[in-house]
Amino acid sequence: MPGNEIRISRRVEAAPERVWAVLTDIDGADQTLSGVTGVERVSGEGYRVGTRWRETRRMFDKEATEEMWVAEVDPPHRTVVKAHSAGTDYTTTFDLSPAGDGTELTMTFSATVGSSTLHRLLAATLGRLAMKATARAMSTDLQDIATRVERA
Image (cartoon, rainbow, N blue to C red; front, side, top):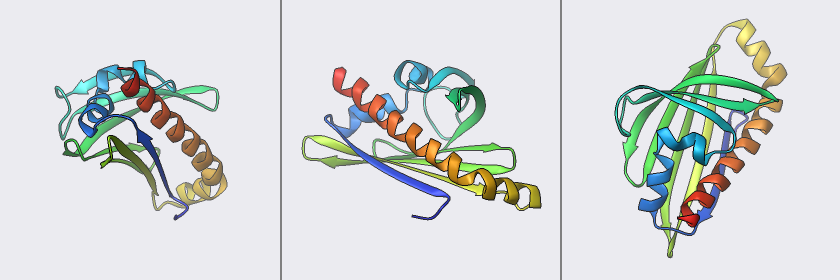
């Protein structure tokens, strides 16, 4: 796995369509994901390419808000969400695959750092710590999604 990419999978005991419904519920994300403290829809209805929202998440004992958008949708198999912050482009991909009576949910996160010297220096200095924290948050997100789906 490259240093700027994290991939985590989890089995969810529900059909892909049920997992998809929870995964793409932007307005309910703060009810599902324990790390998300607020969601504000910016544009678009439902869940489709171009839909934008601001998501406030708690990391490192601080809240940070990032604007995100849907870049790709293939229900109930795959979606790609993007964000841009402080000179870095972020891509999060969710792949859903049938697995017996359940779903294998795979989340892949990647970060592409800007080309400025400052961005490269910050990435080299803080990158490993940030990726570890991101991996923990991703694992928690997948657990939270599974819990909500399996509870329903």
